[in-house]
Image (tube, rainbow, N blue to C red; front, side):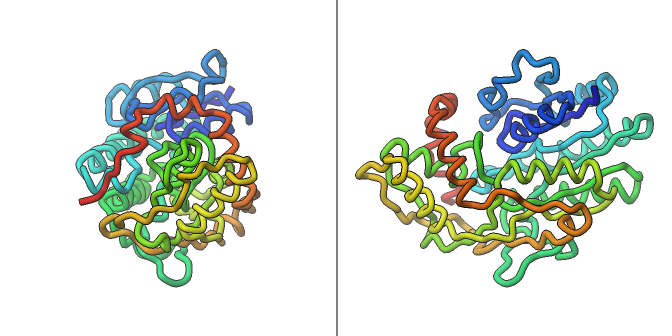
Length: 337
């Protein structure tokens, strides 16, 4: 059975990707250092599967190199990263160490490994590297202009991967995706935090006036795109992955209130509460995903109404998920400097 390594596999996108890979009959080695956003609940159904193995490891450790040569994966999906903008405002150092230094060390290990074994590295990044996009949509040729320490650290990691492709000829591909939503996402992020508050009859905090616009994609659509890029993507290329559909944070909140009403889950305290905006908050992100649509024949299948209903239903049926997370990590306001 062909082996694939997913780094950061106990997180949101990583666990959804592992689930899809196993269903497509790959054997997956999950590499995760175990941070606050790692959650064993996300993959509990595979604890006894012969297609799944978990190894605690930081991608910057020499242990990671030994894992590569032992298991000989045909692909590494690198999702190991610090990802929350508010946390990067409070403490940028963790983002520099994980997203830049960690990726540098991974590249050094992969460079040596790929010289001896056939493999690919798919480095997963974000649309935030392009910065504020007030009009139009950003293609893969658009210049990087990150606003937050998080986005800057991801931009640096993308450039590192690109430089290793150019200089050392490593077989790597870089992907930049829009905002993901769906089951298993840590409630420091907008949608699962709002769902948590709805389920617990709390007010719904929205930054500023709620007019910040994001392009939303259901996590399973993103994971399908990643697998297609692994199979058919061109080495050295960048691929934007998005839905082409933007919504303001206020609209997202209104969608969730509507879903809660239909489920008869809407307490008297569930009301929108506009709070102080985060520093340097970008107004709008928007990707042009024509390249992956045309070259690889991929497009998202799940529209926002379907996806947000599936997401709400998952959290409602899996309330134990929230109990597996520190309440402080759910409720504490970050990035308010």
